[in-house]
Length: 364
Image 1 (spheres, rainbow, N blue to C red):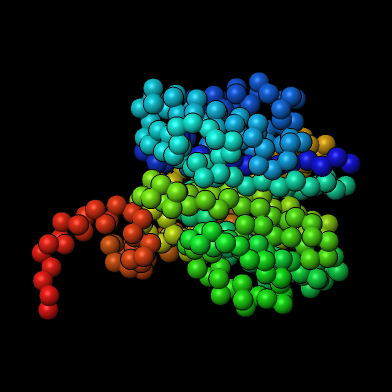
Image 2 (cartoon, rainbow, N blue to C red):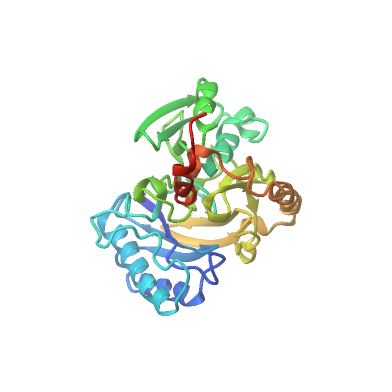
């Protein structure tokens, strides 16, 4: 069977209102643009949003990092930005850091998660989309899915998973990567990914046959732009079943609303709240950070779905806990640990505020 490429490319091109959600006109524009090339450049597509981020989900046969696919996404975001400006939407085009397309959207602002694989007899795909957080937000979940037997039973009882998985971890500051084979190197990996602002899991591969299992977006806008221009709001693709974690095992890590960086002005820690599509409109203190999951079955490159995976009532406790944690953290106001540590605040607007105090400091 021929291989298929799944590309998820996202950008914040304007919020409605403020940073909370997506204007319907931008969704419709994106659908019109992708419909023009369906059956030609791309096999199939879906347009979704998480908060104020526009998500383009596309299948094709062009492979990853393809210029035509990336230009399609870029042109769609540019046209959407023009519409956003007409509507005076907030932050119109804020993720588009360059004026012209240069062959690939990587390094230009939009987030990208892609993978190429041969379809199995049944191909369940979970696509996660986040708002008000950073790319390292997936670290905890991916560790739980592919390395923690207390979360994923298949690591113990499925002979096709028992050999474990290899994680490709990127150092976003030094622009380096390292491959870590688990379970052998779990402790080495945790030493890195426990610092999600710097070390981010990009890919996961099955050890037995090097089959790709997961792919994430890893760009940090502040490092690309040299200033705060909004949070990165990452996306992630995870394949499930048949020698990979079951759908329920893929979702299980989100039953705990673990803490991520982002939230208001990209400057605060908050609980990662799993929600259904209808609740992916963060408004309280521009948050708390949200995550949605679109479930698909892939058939001949065509997307069957999406199923709204976090609309399940079994995630109600996670949402309730997230609200309790949000209450607790919010009471800290401008104090750490609610506010990010000083090294991370360097990429926000706080340094501009502190500049005026510089001349007033005197030696002790």
